[in-house]
Image 1 (tube, rainbow, N blue to C red):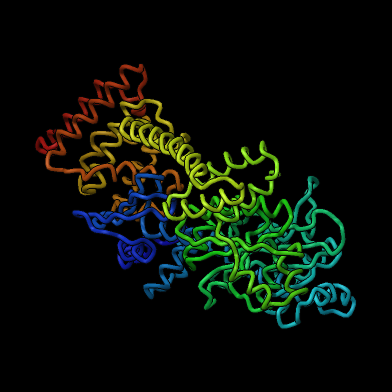
Image 2: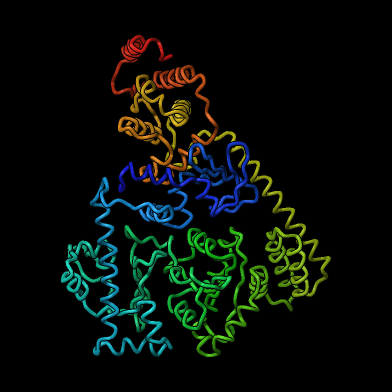
Length: 590
């Protein structure tokens, strides 16, 4: 764990889970809990639950769960350390320099430092006299020097060691450059500059820190773009190019472009809300990032076939949020950069004002695949269009675009409505079937949602879950529970890990709660823990009998399976030990 436990306890004490989540989710109190629509998946009925007395959240739909830090990690697309700093800044709590693992903190600090020094090196190289042709590449594309400096654009020399040598003079090792994604190591162990003879685009996170780079060739070499690999401080799916600038916009919409140059050209033209994904297709985490900062998104991808396919994929992801989606068509140009150069910023602004909704865009895209002057082609168009229209939940929207599709295919609106109703009926039947299957799955679930956490012995694991629930309901019971059962007797690895850590926390004088497990459990393990303890509000009124039943089940499962996971202790000797402990404690064990 990177942070001192006492500091994390203090941070969580100051960060009420209801307040933290309430900034992102509209919550409604029901009894002792709060419910709302999950921000991590698309749903119409709120299955997202916040439990104040346990300072945890859990979604019964997608399974996401954890405490305040975990919520911020997923809501803001941050790593655990970044989420800690984020929350600490909000509550005015200084993050201590002394940490339980100072090497990890120092390692991250060095990666940030070498990244910003590399950005300064690349920028300085761009303006050297011998690299005038490289600077001209940007200038010839219409970028001003002010814009180039604002985005920190630079140049990586055509050398295998220019950056390594420059960073060595500043005290950075080759291994640190490899860890930061700035250098690579070949099969022979030789380390060399990753970026060579490329114009460079620094990638900056929302906190203003350089975390990675994108490099582009200036000729027809391949690969055209080379991006930093995933590192300790950089995760492609959790960041967006220029989000650090776009989040400050006064516009009520974001523009989603495909490439770095498109984004930079848009910002220079006055469209300061433009962002782009980082060399990969748009991800759900990036969509959530966008939805944190705006309620409207304008997709402005390239006009070619690849751009249209990317727009369709983006629409599918963006539809999972409440974002208003528009799709901009670029006539007579392949991308926003080219269009603005030819027509100007005002013309592009008019394109935005007259951009299509995602529904209109999809209809036009479907129509473009068919010759609507041919009867057979028209019929095929109508079938595909009806299936698309049936996915529109809003009745008025569906009716409007049904009329539009009928006009495109030159059929009566009534005929089109019949086809849409048929497609809608098929869709609703499938949804109903899927819902029943989901309900049966939830009610009959005996295995963790994540298959990697598979229970080998379901009956025993259910009893082990009961023990975990008792501990989280009242961690003062741990001492007596520990006398009755050891972690080694748990058959489920994830539950054994949770129980063992509970014992460690208790012996060190810390509370056993969700917050204590943040940064210790993996994401899937944390989700499973919140599912286990969030499934009911466990009462400890008769905990002795409950514990007795749980342990009896675990023992009977072990005997039935012919195994003994209690560390080699004979079951009869173990029971003798339990009774001795019972006598010592005055008969309080069962």
